[in-house]
Length: 290
Image (cartoon, rainbow, N blue to C red):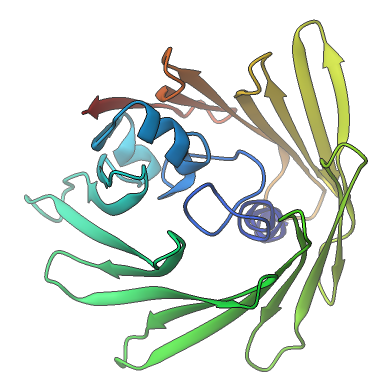
């Protein structure tokens, strides 16, 4: 069941129109421990307007969460991330800080065409290639280097309508039939539902409501409930996930995770906090250079 939950969470994150910079994501989600996830908030427009050239983040509880202690992102004049250095905390096995390096390359139309991922020793362990086919299709090839030094490739295709909204997402995997996601929008252009074919996931319906000055979006699939809260400025202020594990599963009881987002006056993130029902807490702090 825990595997299924993360499959769904992964689908929410990666099977959609795209983070503002990274080619994944349709709704705000976890930021702590997920590279490029904060580009959904720190968009190129916000970073360019504020003249940001470098973004530095520092995380508490990195050891407990086994995630990055710090990240440094270099921003170009268009507000795009061109490189990210992610450093893991020291542990009992090493006295040195282990860092990973991400490089983002763009085409002449300012679209991401390639991402490269390397480690401390310059070893390239993964890359992502984007191929724009016509005006309405993007082919995304995720290439990972295996232990035998051979490359394994995963291929995704995304299809868009004339409004730039993604309407279909196809995952192609070896020895399995393609998995297709279909996206439907309401009259206001907001995501209404997602349907899946050849997948363990069932249809997701997004429900909207208002409470005072807050706008709320909720979705549920099987035993997991998702909730997003937005302020009057359209900024997401919180993201909650609650999963109730059924009897005879590997996990029992209810697991809840809440992520809260805080902003500077210029719209950039100031910090992100995480609180889980297993008493794990963490905060990600942001510093900007112009």
